[in-house]
Image (tube, rainbow, N blue to C red; front, side):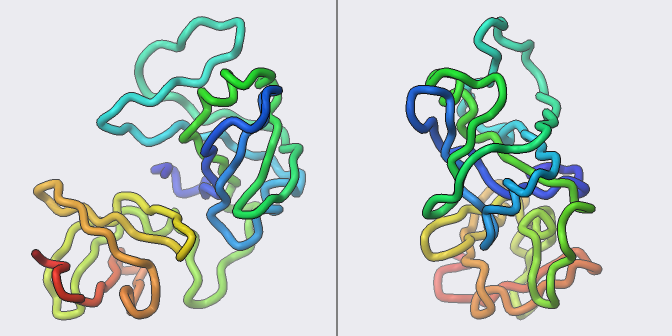
Length: 194
């Protein structure tokens, strides 16, 4: 996710769709159509990973220099809502290969363009970098990422030694989130601390 909390990731490009440069976007929220509402949309590069990800590039451009990629502003998206997300066509992306190179990039909106969440609702970007502690007060690490699967959101909590723990983001598993204090509490199911 982005360190710039003013941009809220709303979906991730998971693959090319068709042969004319469209992409399938996995939506993070309950209403993926918010990305099609005509607001400016930001294209954010994938988080650095241990394995290199392909870098997006225009069809006529050479590969970009190594280093962090800046977010790219898109004037708006054309697309349609499908099960689990969106199919969108990005300007300048006209081949399957160009679309495939965008795998892992995220689509984000400016926080000012979004409604404030209801009490006990959160934008996933707000959970990133929160300290995670057990309900009994033991430190677990920090929320470094999240995964979306068919059953819901899973938080990726990484401790100081680099060990990852996957915790479903539900009231049962995460009974308290305190954004002001910068932490959340995690229930202690068997095996969590092993």
